[in-house]
Amino acid sequence: MVASDLQDADLIHPATQWPDLPDAFGALATTRRGGVSMGPYGDNRGGGGLNLGLQTGDDLDTVQANRARLRERLPGRPAWIAQVHGPDVVDAATVQPGGPVRTGDASIATVPGVVCAILTADCLPVLFADLDGKVAGAAHAGWRGLAGGVLGQTVAAMRAAGAGEITAWLGPAIGRDAFEVGSDVLAAFEAALPGQVEDAFRPYPGRAGKYLADMYLLARRMLARDGITRVHGGERCTATETDWFYSYRRDGVTGRQASLIWLK
Image (cartoon, rainbow, N blue to C red; front, side, top):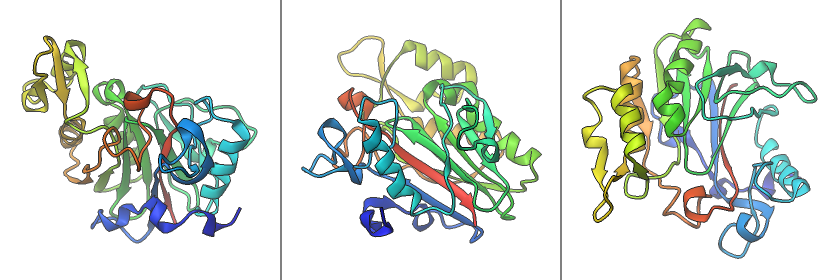
């Protein structure tokens, strides 16, 4: 595989939407475009999809071919972790080929060329960088992880590793007009952010006990609680942009896209 197999137009370049991202960092987010997967893992336009998820039911050799295409765009192998919708943070440098599987929903890096990587298909990916150019971070924030504090844990881990002021970018996730949730989700965020969630949940018309949740707004509130106010992104919707993104809520059987950040 060569870099030309995956075109710039197939990718999202966070730096174009992240004005205070220091030059010391590189970042990418993939879409469903530019790969070799077919069927429900394709690009929804008759071509190959860039499914990067090994646990999706897609052919494993095909997923590895997609990962090889992505690898050509990166300074090192992505630190793929086993995501479980929790708050734990992994040192990306400890994720090694052939080594033990590292479980967590976020990773940080302090070494150039170590790539933090998160897989999503509706959940919110958040990339972090400190303004001094010392620490990178990436978090997978489904509603459970978001309410459970994964963003705060990532920020704390970055600060413990020497980060100063931190800026964040919210990658593609399910949007406020598509994310239907129940009262259990509302209750979880009422507990996590007392008095700060009413405007993030709209009653779903005609569906008692159902709401439309604004995950981007909830993430901004969680980040602000931990002192992170430099927050960018948050405009895309994985569920409605069918030609751009995989969406588990929309399709059930589907692929995964990645959000990645590293120190140069």
